[in-house]
Image 1: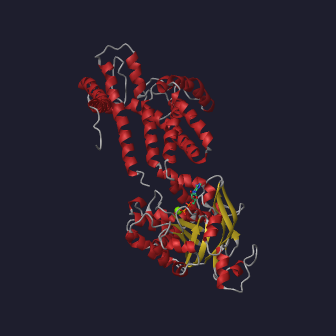
Image 2: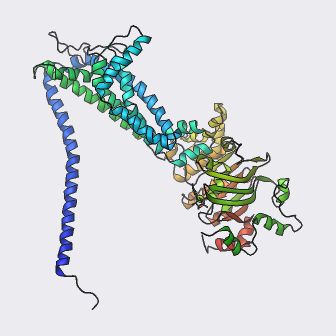
Image 3: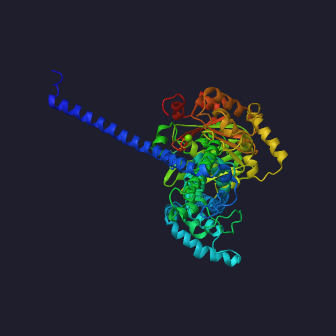
Length: 310
Length: 300
Ligand SMILES: Nc1ncnc2c1ncn2[C@@H]1O[C@H](COP(=O)(O)OP(=O)(O)O)[C@@H](O)[C@H]1O
Ligand SMILES: [Mg+2]
């Protein structure tokens, strides 16, 4: 006898166990698939709601008027629907925020990745990330009650509500978005590239700026795009500190409303559903969506051009 | 763990300083090497024109003493190959010349690496690593072009050295690409990303980058180990063409390569220089049993 056959029950047990496992596998795959599909379905759903709801708006207000009129007063008796003032409000606050967050975030990332001792980095990085965990309403009042008064010491003319203060505070809030992701990207740059730079006689700063930074540009670009999306979509800070008056201006010291600020304002107001004024928030939502999508596509294009290929 | 002692046991005679032993054989009237004896050239008459010399050189990663008591000289404007089994310390030695170990904490050099004719000890604590790296170039095991254009890769070292003159940079870039046998393939695409090049071209680009700064020594760490035979051959021809123009120290695990391109060959084993001699001698009539075993492929 070379081998005794396994008892029948044991063989059956093994088969059953295997069947159960494959069933489990399939169940898990389906669950994950459903999760992935749901994110697509939700996105499509949002786009559809936006499209349908805004189509009633565009039925009453022509797209051309919407895009070219320079006054946005949907809540007035003499309602005008020119989105431009909200777009400039959004772009100016975003620009101010980026002017703060991109350089500071990048410098922090370079310092964390190339200079900071290991222990310091391990403490400082999560600490910085806490910055973006602070509720935005707190930031809003920080801008209104602390930063703007401070700015008014330098610029006595500055109104209480202004885009500058709101933008600066928004920039502070998104610093960790830039610094954390950029630092990850720079630390992912292979050692051999850094060593190559040092071997050519570069010092630490030049190695970081001339080799590590460009090598990580694709990841850093993602960080910038995320920061832009975050700034474009930010609502609370601008609603509180930048004022709610639509104002067609590129001057950051002026008060203005952003697209997001307008949407909350109307959503919280008591406009009758179905009125043009109410429907206008969906049109504004479409613009916000297109703006964010545009930045993301541009970022994606850029990232592909500067892909990592070390 | 095999120690230095068992290594000595395995040898015919047990030279703690193989190079002096070897030279003693070559010139019987020579007095044995004395530490601190001067001038340097007196100790190693076999090499008349020395570019760089190790004197009791050692290196440790923290408490891991990888290189021990090395005494070797490298001839000016010649090619010296370092061979030896994996882990014997070839890369460690090569990276000592341009102070790469200074980038990481806990590393320790002992003894001297004298750069001639200035007689500067490269590894002295008061000698700036960056200053030394300005005088030497290194080509790494894997091609590591920077994420820049072909032109900017070659110009990188010049820019680090503060060269601003555009015409001069352009001229130097062209000359270096010609020297690296890459000019014809790249002259129409100098401003395209270096990553578009093939692996072999990238490695030649790294050689061009290394040559552009007129280095006194070029260090090569197995520069062809990631390349196919054709690309390897081109690099070997290139190194051959640099002979008599710049001092080259090349680590290789390919013994045919060492025979093809090196004037001198050093056999490193467990961090000691077991044999150092003219390449021809090392491969046809090695003075040491271990060398013979290694080159005939019995270990490594
Ligand atoms: N960064 C390091 N820290 C500690 N030990 C190291 C380090 N790098 C290499 N070593 C050790 O030093 C020895 C020599 O390594 P290396 O110089 O890379 O050998 P080779 O290039 O001849 O293959 C090996 O035993 C290796 O494990
Ligand atoms: Mg090695």
